[in-house]
Length: 334
Image (cartoon, rainbow, N blue to C red):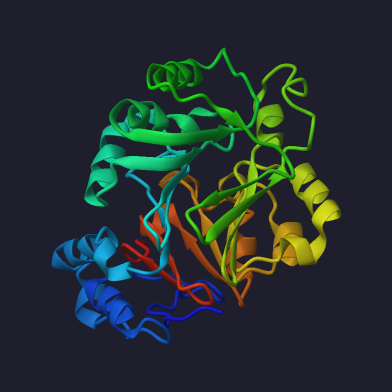
């Protein structure tokens, strides 16, 4: 179930975009549950000045979301792609980083973590060793404390960013822990995780050439549970792995309130959306790639709210354990 009124209706049927503004965040904090007040028209119109400043301030203000689970998609201005970078903070103060974006935005990533008051990453999880998913971890490992580093067992030694990350982790005495299907871990007392992919026992041997499709197939697919809410994170999972995961877990095992679009929305999502039946989807795409043909499948699903980082910037999902509120930093720019 989603709480919070839609604040902008796109001209295309079934397409909905949100806006994160101070008035909405304050309404959320005050109300706790139930509908949030709609954003004022003045803030919606002022997307290049004070409205955006207020929205950005609220996005990074953790005091507004005390006692709730927050999931923040961080994205940075790019004509191509900024990669996946998700910061998860639990009600009891634990922090997880799921992927970390491309390395060229590392300085901005560190600034964003500082805005959130994050000096320690309790769990860092890299879904797979492509630079747009692991690049930011290099600077994070050098400048922040990391408790546990999780990844699939893919020794991608011909990738220079992978090698730089392994060196940075070694320098901090952080040894990677390799995950596979069936593994579980906790973040704090109330948030749990289950790994649905890669298949048990297939790594590291399944990677023969380390080509893009091969590495993507072994992305960590992660189901996060907080009380009655479930979140499915998919990395760059391709269509054949989507089919395999559905065959193993079925609709009951995969049902979630939230889904992260596989491979930045490139993977055809129809089969996954039918199985998961989410209320909210986030598509992490650079500005020049937001019109891929499969994106229309997300946007056409009328009972699901879809948000695209390349169109609305940073995205915040707030959960009280039974309901979700999704707010974004800005409205879609035409």
